[in-house]
Length: 149
Image 1 (spheres, helix red, strand yellow):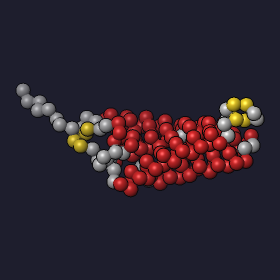
Image 2 (cartoon, rainbow, N blue to C red; image 1 turned 120 degrees about the vertical axis):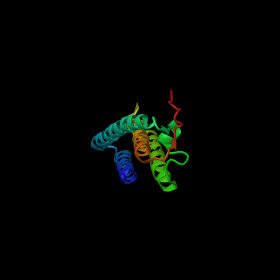
Image 3 (cartoon, rainbow, N blue to C red; image 1 turned 180 degrees about the vertical axis):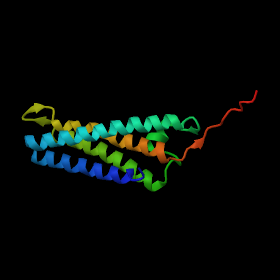
Image 4 (tube, rainbow, N blue to C red; image 1 turned 30 degrees about the horizontal axis):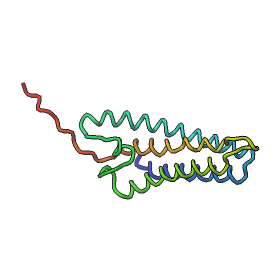
């Protein structure tokens, strides 16, 4: 689980390669492979998002957790290197997804492109950020009310 930053880098690199190959070669096979990669990464992101959210809800009983700190690792939740790596992957996924969709905005003269599926991939970055923060993040303890009689 501590390897989430490395996993994020690997999956973001896979997304980059699949998108670039599909945009440059642009055959039905490369487009189909790119869509497959996009949907698998999106699915991993959805699962990580749900797992991270569930873990954060459990943890919020004792810690103050904000949406920004959970999904963007803001504040003192993570050290600077983890923040740069995880948020850098999220930004890269956004840029790659948009660039792929814009680069081939039409297919055979018709509006739309299979490369537009890449805009779903940033959910991977959000999900992995949330999962990392819910498992390893440093949050401020919640003030516990005095429950005496």
